Length: 283
Image (cartoon, rainbow, N blue to C red; front, side):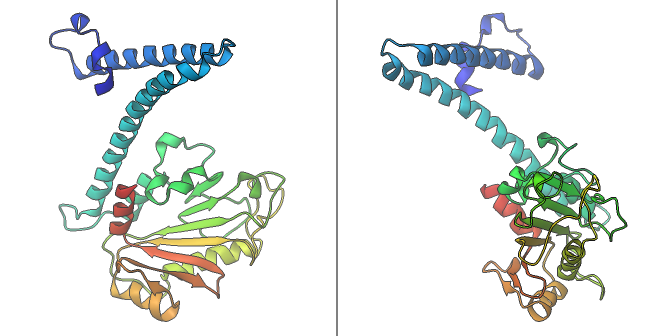
């Protein structure tokens, strides 16, 4: 709120103001400034006396000032989420790591989808900033009324119309995430995360998932762009599966693997929680 200090009515503030009273005072100043800017912008745009060019620079500086204030709030909120992510990566007092559902819920609430989960209630930006703009998302939620296999942790359809409305098109990309428990080092013979994602996608391609309204099958074929992401901590088993079984390439920072799987026709990326956190912090 630094930019609004000079406009704060300090003479009207209680001597022992609470945090809430201070925040409210700043928000009043901010709201008043934004209203003044909107009125001024409207008058400049509607003016026909040639003053547009001379006034726009001054107005732009005011708008930028408000934008910096909003950006500061946005970044502070993200910092809180990153601190929570860091806490969830640590071992608990009993020596165990947090369950994957805790991290899953931080990124996107389990059992929710984008029709009911508001923007403020998820943190998809932790995975990839672009996912925020996806049209439909289902998080560990049954997306078909038919009998279908276990749901993936997170399925993201790039365009809502690709599977909810009439324009159910094969060309719309599909992204699938699989989360594993932090610090996990053991995986059973049937717990290959690459294979799990591949099976999910094969079931969709086989027509075992229909649109929620039951109008038609979800259209995903061998030509549909599909991206599979596994979020887990590196260990010998994951390294073996990635290198030997699926021929993926190790990332330069040794915090994951990547590559195109010709068998499943999916681009895969395995990333550690450390890399996820570092990339999110850089953004």
